Image 1: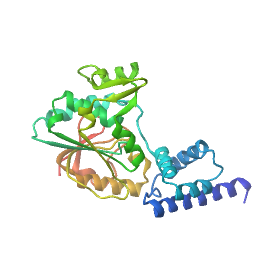
Image 2: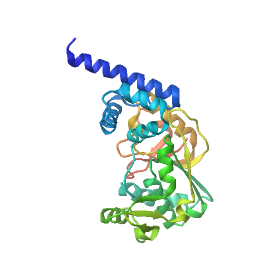
Image 3: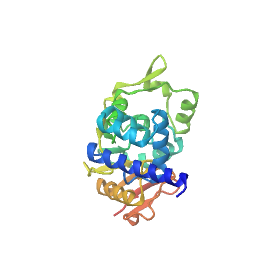
Length: 277
């Protein structure tokens, strides 16, 4: 065996042991995540932590909860600004909001919320559309560290690009209406922040915890392998009310999932599906 192959084999063994240790010690099962993407992010984390091997990383995360949170942060797919995908919010406003207005109450689940930028963008949209008072917005992530950041409602101060994306998303006021400035940070208005229920939930291992009319789970399933991907889709299906809406990322699809036939994609919406059966 060449030195290169031997090194790759050793790295693979170390990664397997790291993932096994994280699952057994902390209950976060990362073993079913898509391997190539997982490896890229793990190698990036190794460089950022200035460690030489995954064995060193394993020793650290098994004994240190903060080190585990750092690892989970690196592995998370999180948007870094408000209205990072304005087309999605524009489509949601045009195609989903008119239906929600006909319902007396609405439960929304944002699964894989990361540090909360998309969750707060959704809250702003619901506020502008007159739905905030009868919506209950739940936001979850597997990382308690990310949730702790999200709960603060403190975000990097939006700039011109953020304001432009807000307008492209159909914003009806000014983005500055929804936060107060504190130096280089933006503090989301309490009426929005305090109306969101942030809770820890691991899509890979935890079951459904309510029935929802809207589920937003965008760009999270890309990190899962096919088996886990289908299992999570089953969980989302169980959690979505009939005629409810499932919002995925633009690179994601329901094709080849167990419940694909139970949905229809809203024409021209770019990955917003309605459960029909």
